[in-house]
Length: 320
Image (cartoon, rainbow, N blue to C red):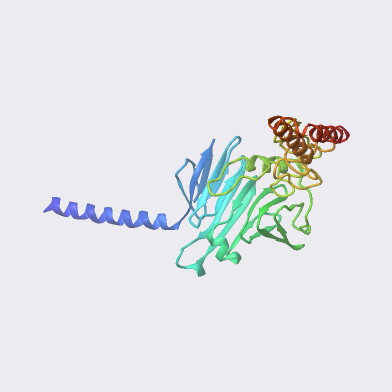
């Protein structure tokens, strides 16, 4: 009988443990999808190192050390990428797919930089989603953006964010950056300090499943680059074919992204700014070569026209 009673007590305790465990799981906020280097979590006065696959609860403060980064995927699908030397707190997160009225996502940036990709919660409950810093509060409007402390720098990749502090508020859209120096300084669009640009460049190179990498890891304005003072392109047009040109990293002009790898103002691949043959010239050369082959095949009937085309193309090329 004693053994039977002990067995019953054990089963009861086991059941309670399962219930407690599932309850804890239900309140968990995010999964550590990736942890490179050292990621630490502190809650209720205790701190420990966490690895990939760990669950993060509301109330937890996460810290990445030097040469480290982490990716958190929340239950609604939103993603937070933490850069090195970052302190970030999940203040209050609540998500139940069947209870949108109870949605809540309040996050604090104490130090460092992060990238945010919104999920279902931000899409359906904008007012319930905010990220706070000592300088300003960021409201989410379904977006992909990066933010960094010191005091607060923002770069919007897509969608919009609303930034507010004691001085007022402003909305920033894709391709815009803002640096807010203090809580009493009105948020306005403008360039970012070099240290923040460096942090954003590091974040932009961390792949996130389900979210595209920025076109250019130099984030300004926005993710597409465009604040490189000087860029270069390379390309050439050879007789009979036009080679595809590629732009060096950071290539852009007048604050706009060079999405296809060509400098702004150039017309297509294979175009170099002001010095190389235009795509039309390259096409003309290719057409001339094709005509020459056709003429040879037909017994030379088109030799005069081919020669004329080649001469005019060469002249156009040399004057570019």
